[in-house]
Image 1 (cartoon, helix red, strand yellow):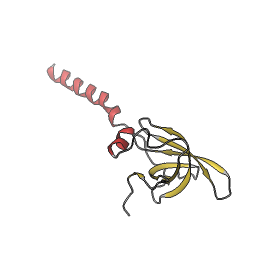
Image 2 (cartoon, helix red, strand yellow; image 1 turned 60 degrees about the vertical axis):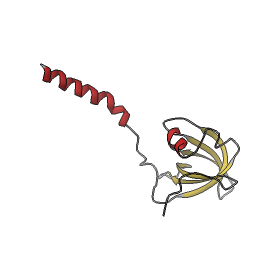
Image 3 (cartoon, one colour; image 1 turned 30 degrees about the vertical axis):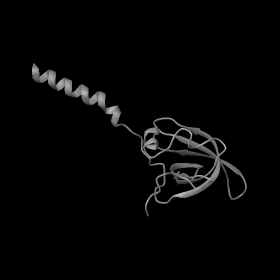
Image 4 (cartoon, one colour; image 1 turned 180 degrees about the horizontal axis):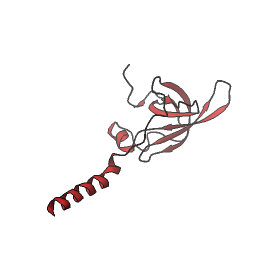
Length: 126
């Protein structure tokens, strides 16, 4: 009887703890080469599980495009010095991103370079 209760308890603990380890894949991003897009921040979501920066980018043909950049969690950014006020609406930023594999306007944010040269994020080593 004790073995059955212990087994049931262990199974319940594993089942209840599984969501803590769940995470979605970054398979939609092309992590082979980082690209740079420059534009104006139109929305900044300081939220978990991931932050988001939306920006208006002028394409090579002169057309405005809306880009959606998925960032890290709030906790990860706080540990490297970001705050909810680090990025503001209207800021013009240079975003270094891993683009979406399907070629649409978006990607996973690597780091930002602000107009004053401040770098937000961790620059990957070559």
